[in-house]
Length: 325
Image (cartoon, rainbow, N blue to C red; front, side, top):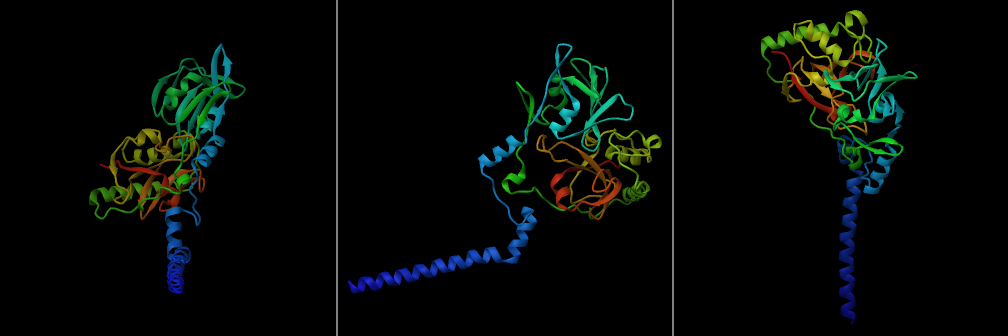
């Protein structure tokens, strides 16, 4: 009996030492400054929590936006201002007073009072019935939402109206989507580099010019939105680009973010819970050394130079295109 008691005591002491060592290792993981720094780099915050499925679904339910439907000429209509807000876009009347634009940093969708067609990234699309102005707002048939947005967002119809459903985000699983930093190509063709330098120098002449959503051509408006700025700069050198950022995204050849040259176009998503994460919402022009020049309402208003090796632009970057020949 006495020998058994001694053996049990030795076993308990041995296990106690193992538990103590494990506790020390765990404590080291928490207090090690290097691990804390790594968490900041990859998680974006000092404390990252993985939400449960129930918590994530509760948050998405809270973020749902319902657009009321009203009857106009015996048909179901919705207000474009409500639609833009619910879909996570910006909506506003443009300068002519008869055109309503929807987009992020430039209008992708344009509607005109009394017309049965609208433009989507420069392409004309038919409406089931004309757009109607009512109390300062532009209304369109509710049935047009599918042709407007397609798979840009998810929607469902109910007795209270049309509900835009939020999408899950990377933040709900503790990931921020950050990736490789933006960097210059190691070797650039001399002729292309010379033209790029001229384009960048010309672009910088517009620093400080105010940003305006849906800006008219610069000579008349003296303002830019993101895509009209790029169009103006390249047009000066005989390179014709379409008007909207989504149309411009279809131009040129793809370029890796770690092989950029001055003059390359950079396309970004503007985040919203209600739209697909691959929707182009902003365009800027790379000028080298991890910087771009662009027309934007933020962080300042107007044409500005921004360091793009920061969490927001690293996370929301979609792709780069080279349009120089």
